[in-house]
Length: 450
Image (cartoon, rainbow, N blue to C red; front, side):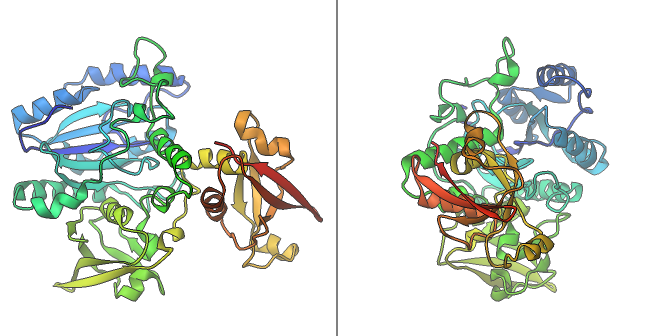
């Protein structure tokens, strides 16, 4: 992308399972290929949208003085259909705000500028608010479950973030220094297709002349590529990559999804509670950065060093402005759950050889005399093909209950077992698992994969 000289704000809305603003979804029963092609045909008929051409969007933004809205859409995702229809498409408030933006629709991350568009590539959708000089005003959108999104995002929250971004733009460039932290460090590679995991398999553009689906890089594949690079190049898997974009609830903040960051609840004995946060606190800034949404909070947490940090938060409480210091002690990221992530399927292949774990219910624990503070995770699924079938070939069965990992019995979540394997074992090493199968203890050894 060439340098852009004007200073009109830019909003990018993106997803690995995405949100789109536009006509209703394509027909049920279509193939993935048909859905992608039908989407293009539908949107190219609309004057309201620019399809697949970000540069044209920037040009129109400079011409009209409007902000730019860019939507990246994972077409085949059925959850995305619900977000299309329920979150935005029929909402008059969002529709009114959309009139203030030049709208561009992108349906793949091929060629995406990773120096600017850094976000949680596993989530259902994400939004960037920027200006043409590259300053990021804020982000919107998050995810903490495979399918549920209503606890994290809403139409009202999206509208509040859009209005906040426009306000920040009106203050530019006086707020330049406050916004500096909203851009991250230089990426390992400039675009997704340059990562070793993707290099040679994908080009910088989706191939409408050939196989559209096979040519498309999904958002989660960018996260997969980053994890594979870390797995290959480091002895110990970095916490920042494993526990990326920590949800505010991991530090004890339950935020209201219908407004800009506001503490709906503060979890007792959490870092947030120890810091002195209270229910009803409006969190205006964190680490000096203005906040538009929960995604902005996650961005600050993501960029924070693993331990020993104390983040100052600017808070409005009962009409007064105060400062609350949020302490982050060693291991704070590990409260995060990564099992919902699409990219965890790749981690399961690497570490487990392709099985999926779920917690054992309290009644089932009691029946098997398994204490609440010891490992007890049921095998919910075992992969059947290729490298995801390694566990099956080793003898793992659906219904087995994992009770020990290399002799450890204190790994209580699937997340904990994945983290143990990534941080303590290298490709080629073996992990010794012990499962309960009926009344028998079944030891199974599984070799770590690349």
